[in-house]
Image (cartoon, rainbow, N blue to C red; front, side, top):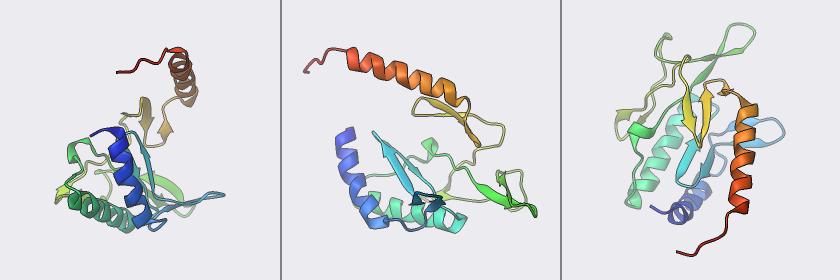
Length: 153
């Protein structure tokens, strides 16, 4: 699917879910979804909210003849741990691990020792592996794109 068609469809989803189930960012408010090209990232302040976002997204896409590819999905779950309220990565190694599903299939949990690549940036459950490198790579790529001649197809 082209990025334009995806964005047209996803805009409607964003209107439907509004700011419900989101993760509260200080100074920003509730954040529950971000999209770029044909990628979407859903986020919630609770495990129940995350599953609800997944269900609403799945229902929305199914009604439009689209579906989430579970094999390309990854879930990162952070839970409060201890009396100091530090965050802990809740993967399959914890007691009572979270379970998020799409199409009755479990979304794999991102493990504490894993890295993944999202939009060209390598991440761990704690953020970008090296944010300085990421910014450098993005600046170089943007510079190359801005210098490239436009060629109609």
